[in-house]
Image (cartoon, rainbow, N blue to C red):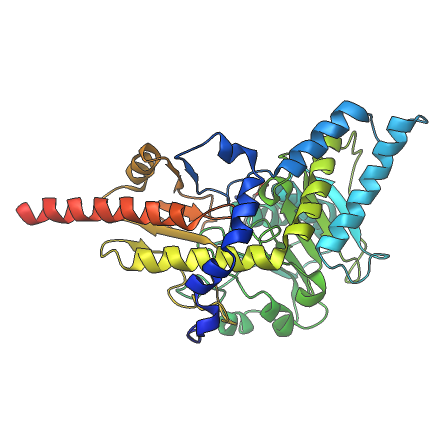
Length: 417
Ligand code: PMP
């Protein structure tokens, strides 16, 4: 993998952070949870994101003025609720820069996990034939590994044998496109990929996959960590399915999206009776999309990339800390891997669980465990820090200061022995 070009000075993280400083203060002030959490830093947005006031207000307004079931009534509240479901589909298409809204499908799920499983069990199992191959990213999130294994098992029970080809990775955690070129061929039908990696924080450069596999192979994108963090364009990425979770994109938990392009292979159809939709979740999702429009996904991405670069650079300066994944490409203008405000690391002298507890005592809320990575992922647990537009330079610097203190005390203790 080529190293990134060095950041030009106009794009230097500190400059970006200074330029966006007042914008970011205004953004943060829109999240009521922080008014109640003085001295605490929420650094776990990859697990779930906090909600802006407009999202909370929209849900409250809906539940106190028009709450009804969708598609089941003749009265005003029911009609309004039915209309909101359709409006929300339209807003999701806007969010994803859908080039062909007449053809595509937007299906609501409980989250990314259900959306990917739906692709596997409602679509893939009826699409594959004996001898077909699918590429599975076994070091990505389990939600993007187990559905494809399940599909293979369902097909095996029907007497259809399909082969799962493990996506190769570079040591940096990026997909190894050169190695993948040797693994795909005339039997490849489907490739599952992730947009931003939930452990390495890196942009996986999925645009390279379409170039490699050609025009007929179906590509399914797990966008759980990218939607709401940067502009995601299905037109540019030329993928066929996109799955994401509302709760990671500032909407409520329990609402997710499966977008289907419907131009390669059979049209996607959601199987089975769907029941009552998560109407409050849909309201929150629509309000979150509106919030992204007003706030600017470009600016959100610039802020989190720059803040992530400050964090990564700070971690590199601590002698004992081992940063996982991508070691280069912090440049904001890099066309290769780039961190999007998510950094995972270990300390050789302190277990990740202990680090998590110590950081929590300092009011720093991070994620410390194995991060639900697939079977080809990291064997040892680690600490993940994940940022969003509401995180501040001060929070990152506080975290670095606590880690520096720990590092010093540990180095002193070892030198006594
Ligand atoms: N994919 C990725 C990359 C994720 O980070 C996550 C959540 N950590 C998921 C899928 C699953 O999302 P959910 O639990 O919201 O279904």
